[in-house]
Amino acid sequence: GRGEMREEVRRRVEAFLERFPAHAGAPALRARRIAERPDMVAESDLEALLAVPRGHPQWRSSRETVAAVHARRFREGGPAAVEAGRRYLEVAGELLAAAADDGAGVRREPDPTEVDTVRLTLEIALDARVADLERAAGELARIDSWQSAGWDAGVVAGELRYRGVQWAMAMGRWPDAARRSEAFLEDGPYRDAWSRAALRRVLEAAGPASGGGSARSAAAWPLAAAVLADTDASTAASVEGLRLSLAAAAVGLARPGDAEARTEAATVVRDAMER
Image 1 (cartoon, rainbow, N blue to C red):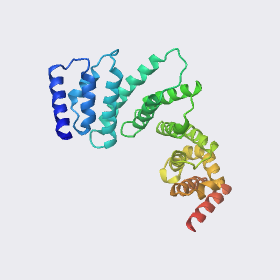
Image 2: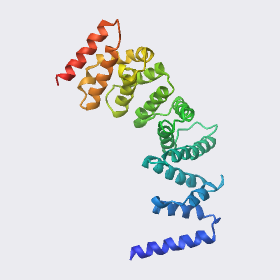
Image 3: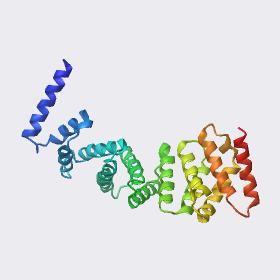
Image 4: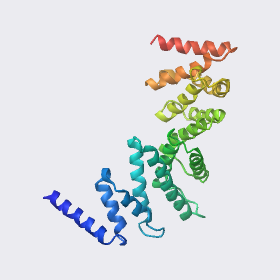
């Protein structure tokens, strides 16, 4: 049956790789073996794929296979997640550097694979367990350069903008975080998960419950005021919309000496309690 045929093919691949580990076709066979048994990846296969030299026809595909293994391990969590995340960043960095070298001196848009690599790089680098903020800054600069050259981020624009907010917060740059969040208001807030998450994260971090202090509150107040003034926030058809309004209200309630802000915020809280 088919199961027996697959097993026979697997045995032949194993025998070939054992006999001819340096064969030009070996990387493709190793990648196939990994794809067929993703939960049983041998470190020796990963090492062999990383040993494929630059200039080899399968250099890129070999590294993409290794990167995919590390990304999967990172997302699975557990004790090995942080190391897997760091190893992903290393391999992804090589792939992005190679793409930049290939396109040096040529005005071009990034291909979808490059964009996906940058997205995952930012996700991992900004994860609190990895916290490679320097690497995240480099990828945000790469995105800026793409956009300066005319690239339209399209459906991933909100996600990439959110990563910028996330980075600014991790760096403790609260005015920058608030400024980056205000960009969501320009496009119509509350429309997607990325906009709500960015706005709420900044506002919650500036509220009294966070213990963040007056500097955060002062930086976030213009953002909170804009949210409080927009009824779409409280009427958004999601729990997230309500949480966003309450986070903005908390910032307003924490402003001593600003009676107007406190009154406006209290109204939002009262309306939420009456629902």
